[in-house]
Image (cartoon, rainbow, N blue to C red; front, side, top):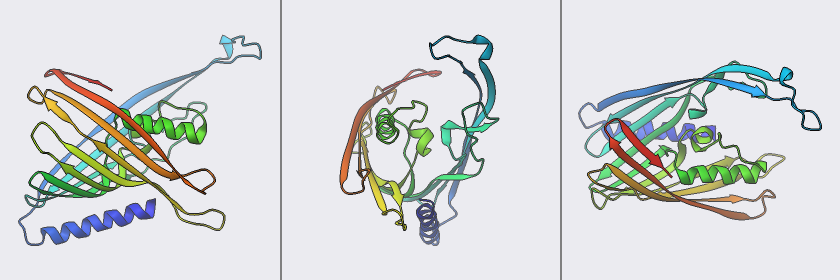
Length: 261
């Protein structure tokens, strides 16, 4: 996956240079965010009968942080570039200090977004490392993946935490009106090169959503569906996994927004 991502990043830079060669200086934008959480962990100790030993309870704390730096360049009216640098585990954060039962995560730079977008009229096409934000449907996708791989579900390991809102692939957008949009993303969910001990495989993913806004964009309803096509555990045949959901976002006041899904 790493080598594939690097090729996409290189392609994005190359296309950007060619597209902007004959135009004026691009319009640049920079923004970002930083998140800090103090996490406490209490491990309860029980005997074989289920009796609780409060004196053996382990209490530990850790500092968890996450950050994003977003860079944009509008080359001309049709071509735009978007990049995002972040910590590797996205909203899951990086841990300074290790509570019992957790593993330390490496603190290095990740590039979850490096895409080029071409827009003409109501149509848009994006390619590269795409920004695919969290949704109810994508959290169901992660629950299904964890259930299939691990036999259990960890609600903290959602789409943002696992994939850092990133997917290498192609996105097509269409906005027939100012109130309705349609987005279709096709990309690689997982990639493994063949080795001496295992077969290579490529799992594909397709995501489609249709945001519908009303009341002067104060409220938005977004139905979505996600399909993953991948090999079974024996690598002998492909199977399909499909999830769907609806997200709702409403701006109640200038300071209060309600989201549900």
